[in-house]
Image 1 (cartoon, helix red, strand yellow):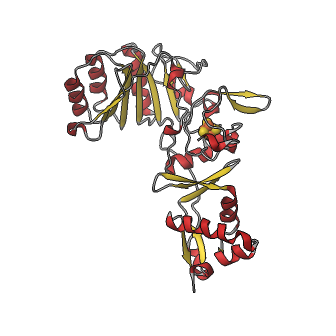
Image 2: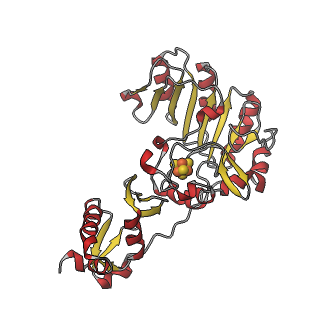
Image 3: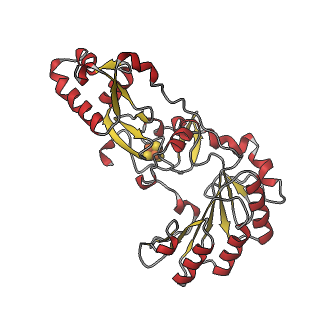
Length: 339
Ligand code: SF4
């Protein structure tokens, strides 16, 4: 029996996502994706318990060579495997779901912040289950100030810390020593540097110092709208199916202590005044509204094949009964030649 008369199955962790003009296969365990024509998407989503012979039977002979090309690519990329008919039921689909064992998973805090506000914020965020913290500053930060914050975080539950600030002719050895002493500080990112560079040093294997010559002057300069922020993995994929993968479980706090969904948004929900301020605000439907606006609910994004890997954070607005981005994306799913 040749493979054309055996049953083909898409691996459960290879997910099909249809776009307006083309589709993508997300290879979740390999953290990669492959763009495919919508015709192949239709074949794979229609013929779920069939053989290649079955597929060919439904198409004109003139199209069989294209079908052969499709399946050659699927086999080469290990997106499909073959089995016997009685084995089909053994390979079940993944039942996607997403949850997080905390009310907040990640936070962005603007520095410098008054010490009591910073302390209250960090203690509250830890209590709410937050494990990822980004500190962001529009000026150069004193290294003693950075070290004091990191020392405070030493016995706290945060797993991943990154600091973004303006470059200030820091002593590189001192930066490496800070990273060495604070292993959960994974990224030091300096903008306004002389040139773009990633510093690698064997003393800080899991950590990075990134220098960027770009300047950042306002929070909207941190918008992540380009393909370098596409991430393919099972957690992000599942979260994106149900939630907005940028706003969901996120809290942002300005240097004045305002609690927001995103630092670049004007809307403030209140201030960090005591240990319960963040908890109380995060529980409200108003604060959680954007958490639930996933890309399937956003005009244009809902037709984009990248919608479950794209963590874009262009602000949203609700207009004429639909959610739209307030500025255009770099990518147009209706004219995909431009990527
Ligand atoms: S159209 Fe939407 S989902 Fe697609 S790349 Fe742009 S922002 Fe991301």
